[in-house]
Length: 281
Image (cartoon, rainbow, N blue to C red; front, side):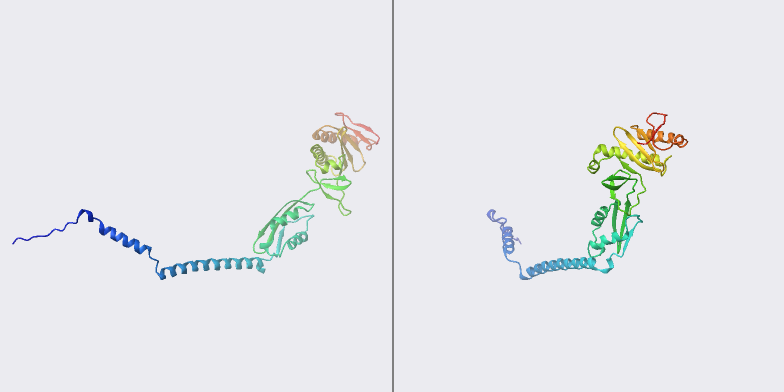
């Protein structure tokens, strides 16, 4: 039996029509609005995110408020190194005057700045140590001499006037003279250099034969250095030689002067190896 099969061929003009039909249906479905459920879910997610952000902000604000108000962080201790001229009470006055006393609120930099204005403070550092301690480290100035700027001031080791003397301040240091108040206050470079050299000479002679026996040290740009002793008021004139040579000449001359009948007045040491004594001016 012969079977006949019918083969149905697609005509050339109709190829791909089925694919195009599917794509048109997909586009039509894409253009339709999303179902209500999907939109509600999207709105719900957005609302949840906004609520989470809000709650987080409120939590941070509450935590900050608690940290800045809690008695747990109240400053109870100021850990300060021992100082001769800066008291713990002065530091406490600055800390209490700068805020509520809560450690978080204490401006450490501002406390350090205000302490730096104290005449005896050379350098200072302030840091917080939680929960309730403020650590203060102060380096004080060391007075090495006095200088007359209309009134007496202490000089530190770098030649800076830093403290006006009162009736209660010790005045047992040598006084430096021969320097202009105006030049010192405006920090004239030449004046500052000469003052530092004069202080170097003072340190040199006080470490040797004139230990604790210098009343005054005078500088003159023409006549040089004059050192006055405390006990006899002897004036030791060493001229314009450098500081090391001036110290050496005084060291060499003092034993000879001590053996002389007259050890007061003026001892001229400007000539190497010679001591010329004459009455005081």
